[in-house]
Length: 252
Image (tube, rainbow, N blue to C red):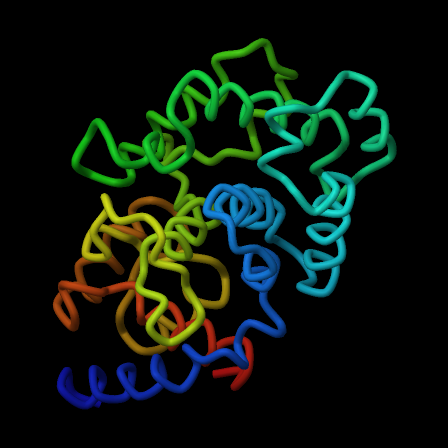
């Protein structure tokens, strides 16, 4: 395919997979259970953070987290007592365990009570959104924390593609016109978003000639960003649906 044919193909696939059917098998279904802005963003953040491995397992663990927070994550985070944290005993999703989750709850309370909430943290500071992720991590871990827990927030300035945080940002920022993403954060432009780069999107991108770098790291993300912004500078991450769909559903 030449460039024009490739763009046309990816535009078609992006429209095909950005549909409500996509939600039924994706972690984004968890925040779709809520209507309150803070509940949406908190449930989305926590669901995105554990989004690696088998998708059925991810959904099971995310639903369990919401259940333990009494289906009101914002209220629970703001008003929980020490005794309420006992219900998290034994929680584990791959390497994310109860100690990690308890710290995340404490840090989110700090973010909402002392720093204006999640949206503000990603909407201020550096223009480059990947640098904002780096800034966010510093704020998120300003409380005393287990050393092991820091690995659960990736840092693009240390070479990570930050797949899970970039996915969370896509959910919050992109328009909800097609009923998948939410578009509830108005202070970040969709043009600044980056694709959640993982093994599926990376492999498909390489097969299509969009990515040369072998590692799925921050350098690969920059390379892919440049290519996709040429196709649609206003909404480059719509192609996440195309790349992911081709990899997961079509085994491209």
